[in-house]
Length: 317
Ligand code: CP
Ligand code: NVA
Image (cartoon, rainbow, N blue to C red):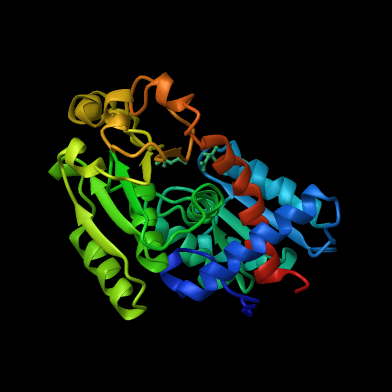
């Protein structure tokens, strides 16, 4: 079923109903098929898109750029060193200036409040390309990938291992709650997600009756039993480089190695990672290169899903 998401911001999946998220996944699959057969239409013809980056990026930047060009739009990369954002100029002023010139604005950076402020003042859709708290476009790509490999989302056991309070842990927990997966966060207690967000996710699952469950299990072998998906991410995120030594010590027992991967007892388990990966830390090379590792499908799906977000919010559909 089609939903009208025109003019909407995309800051976190909390703001979208399960049906709206499913619509974005269906649209992504459709746009992916059209790209493969070269039958895509320029659904963003004449649009101009600002891509603001406070932090580095390979996938997100390239996904927005290629998706925009595929659909006939012009993307403009603006690194924090190129513009006055928050330094010489208030964020709300930059938002109002860019909103007069661009049809949509992507922001990747540190404080989630910055993307919220851009959204409040821009007057055009603002898309969150990662903040310290959330990474919602990544979740669309991940869910599309799970669907492609396992055929369904509802009722699947999804285990996130590592820094379960980072932007990926937070966002995957929200995505699972909204789409009816059984989410297990597996981390040392100190890296468990904020109890407020956990409660919020449980409430969403109940409100929409998605059938999702949310649990936190700190023992890795117990956590991964019967998992359909094992997902991990870096042990220290962008901006946390000073925590490297401490995190390596804390998270060593949470490394996804062959021993842990086999502990699912399920031959069909897939391995996922948003990338970039630090091999030898959160994942070993043999798991990363395993035939059940789907990390590059996830990376490709960043493009198709980001395209769907732009098409749905500012495109000709
Ligand atoms: N997964 C992801 O967001 O990758 P980049 O940091 O390369 O954009
Ligand atoms: N948690 C990671 C995700 C990178 C895509 C980071 O924020 O650095």
